[in-house]
Image (cartoon, rainbow, N blue to C red):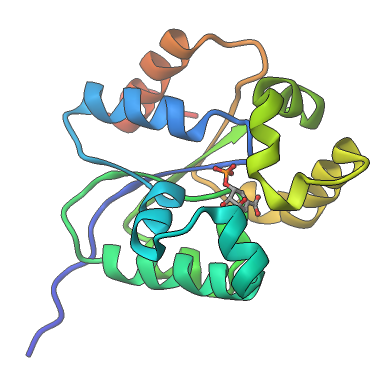
Length: 178
Ligand code: S3P
């Protein structure tokens, strides 16, 4: 039997606090596509929060869940996807979707990301740390190469959600180089 063709998803990647979930939802509405936010979907399936999964089953189990979800999505109709910030570092994950999926890196400075997250940082086990700025910088250093392999890199430090959504929609529709 022929394998169905892979879908041309639009994947938003970047550090926690980059705005993937907020912008992803707005962008999907604008493009008339479904939106899938990985963390809430994994939490729904596991019946546990990301923090509980990390604590109870370990980070590796969480990464396996992210990979399994990615595998399922390869042949589903096109969507806007917002995987968690560590998804790009899971061996083989990006290659399950791209090509033909396109990946956009929402690049945020680590200090800005932390500010934006505020108390929400507590829901990120990898940042539950005495020095969260050092922790998020380490995550960036480890992942930056993968983030920069995106088809488009967009700096989001000084952009509001509406302006950013409009910009990404133009990028997604191929009306702009980025
Ligand atoms: C993680 C980012 C989180 C979540 C988990 C691990 C990471 O998602 O998947 O806490 O490794 O950077 P967000 O990027 O949506 O915060």
